[in-house]
Length: 452
Image (cartoon, rainbow, N blue to C red; front, side):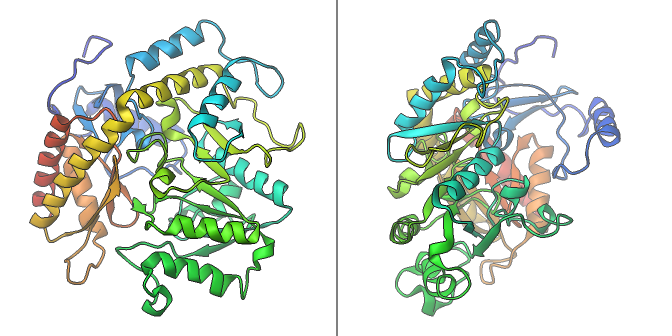
């Protein structure tokens, strides 16, 4: 494509074998010079440019993007208002190091976050460059504020790959292999997955998987290996991301809030993937009417620029200068993108996520009725998981089928990505239209039919 701006097509357009010849050259160079530790999928997308919900690769193939760079490009690729905000800020001030100097952008975004984040106001914000950095901040803050060292997290969770965050992450063994013992003292609890309830019926009572998880903490951990008075925080995803796009049961977060209040434990909600309008509300925890003590944010807040934030009750974030800082955290250009992103989200994209997300979920549920291999369709807004099984009688996981469907979608020009062992995640840009959904569902239908 000769122009710098893509005209939005109505359907994907695949012109070459995938990857094409230019793409193959880049993949070869990547293999020679770039770390092999990136967990790339079997399909090989070599992106060149993108606009809205459309991505063009280096060989001119155009794809409908229903992954948004793993839930990052919340306002769509290269939203013109975000691009303009970035350009205007880059002409004025690119960097000044907010750990040593002042500029208006940091308090401006922190004030906005105080208004919208589900943490009791007043709050304070520490700025980072990624989700794992926001999580590291939360962990250090919890230890500093409580004087305690233990944490509770959940199996199949993902909170990052830096060593502190990795102590909580438990979605894949590959993320831990080779790094010896965990840095932090973390006890993991089964996550209350209602489709695959990990708890015995006796533990659940009338409260289902949520009660099973709460009982596990109160009746097992606190009475055996993990004294409540030594726990600094419980960290949880309101919707598990890398674990398979699994929403928490309705009563679960309120139960965690009760436990934390009862024992002086901090509740940390990781909204890195689920926040910023992804679930049809600004933050996923709003669906549960729960306020955390600390919230971690990244991904969708910057529309593609690297920015993370840890928002906490102001009385907790009372540490002294030098306790925690970041040279690049709170970069003026990234904050300009974030402020514009929040403006666009509040201006209609959160609502679009709810409405078009419901339309997408309804269409996926129709495909579930058509195909025995779809065991579960779950999610909120535009954070939807489709879990593949061998059959609905056994609900045995079908990871190979999931992988084939993922590849078949790519070959037809639809970008989606796996999550968990056998789930496909749908995390499109929040600008997705019903017309885009119709095209995506048609391709998804064809891909499943070709893969079973």
